[in-house]
Image 1 (cartoon, helix red, strand yellow):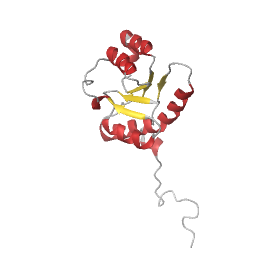
Image 2: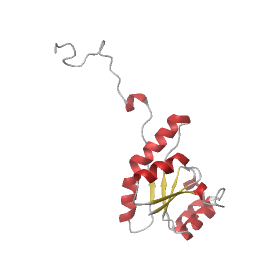
Image 3: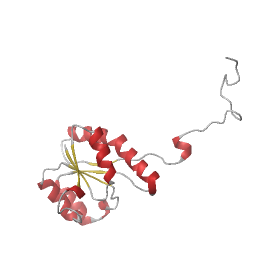
Image 4: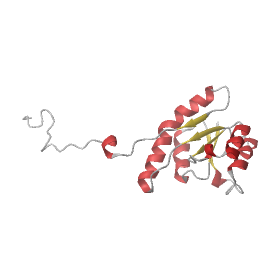
Length: 149
């Protein structure tokens, strides 16, 4: 599958994806001469004409704008969206992790699809309590912590 990364997709994500998803061509819009600044109403038909099958974006508002929805529908391209709600390094890490975790399954679903699909990669919870558990063995010792070797 030929996958276009929208202009709003983090540039470092492309390198990660081409390392992990070897059976697909991954192209970032910013690497295509003359494509930067292309409005979404024009982007989808242009991408379809250039042989792309899907676009990865983090533009959550796109599906709320009637002209953009019409362009997506008319293009026949699959649209894959991921959330990017958090700023800085943490936000970048969450966005990359979300795409890396969900995109392989999404691409498999698209390969088997009998028509256009809209996919939303849900994300990875950024709250520390959900991501890891820190144990202080002095105050909460694991079983056998004080046992002699």
